[in-house]
Amino acid sequence: MAKAYQPAALGERDLSFLPADPERARTLSGDDVVAYNERGFVSPVDVFDADEAAYIRAYFDDLIQAVVSADDRRNSYSINAYHLVCQGLYDLNLEPRILDLVEDILGPDLVCWGGHLFCKLPHDGMEVPLHQDALYWPFTSTRSVTVWLAIDDVDDENAAMHFVPGSHRWGPLDHEELELDGTRVLGRGVSGAGQYEDRRVVNELRAGQVSLHSDLLLHGSRANTSDRRRAGLTLRYGAGDLDVQPGWEHWLFPAVHARGRVGEHWPHRRRPRGENPELMAEVSGEFDGNPA
Image 1 (cartoon, one colour):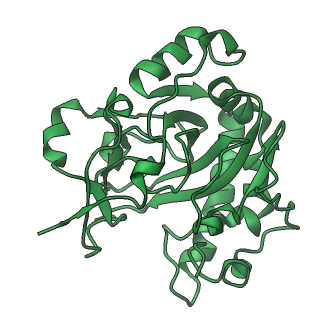
Image 2 (cartoon, helix red, strand yellow):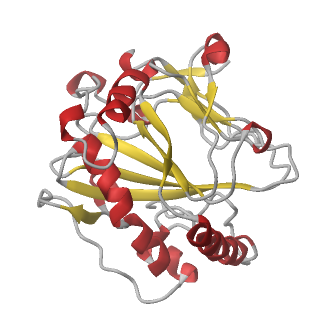
């Protein structure tokens, strides 16, 4: 039986949804921001044209191949915080067209505190259970937004993300610990996930498009049973004055100041020189980019 999961010091955190101001929108439309407030996400949003998307895909083709073919413990899910060692990823974190979208949600002061490539290879048998990011992330409030950049065309056939619209307004939901038995990527998921099956919507995107979703939105993805790869880069942004709970300061480590004024507790990692994925273990202490 799965164990119930409760995040540490839940009562000390503000896990209520903070709506964005539609009047602040400059790149998104006011209607887009209203939809974000009501549904918890906005999608699809065009960012990169076809030529740029092809260039980005070729870049990730090379990076994924370098990681999965290495003689170590890494796999296609291990490209986590690689902007610390890969110039191309660092530049994507600070892409102005992406920051413009995030600013419309969070305001002018932004930190990029992480990025993780979720790459489901063809016939990958692992799902991402439905979950709320805010219950994984030890921040003091829910002022983070995830930008999901489609590297490949993604649809239900090759395991696009699913969202549960409006779930960001339900507050922190009960989660449970799940066994990492090779069938799932994450070790936690919302309790009673089956009750949300009829509410799930598919986040279908073309390569080069993005979606933005709240850290309280229920989301996940099924196993990729198709012959096509499904790669998407999650870029995680927080308001500049966002903080972490005591004891979780290691979450600050990969941060890059993205725009405006950022709290002094956030470091600012410099742009790396070139592409050096083999250095990730040396930088972070783990091959997957997580601290030891």
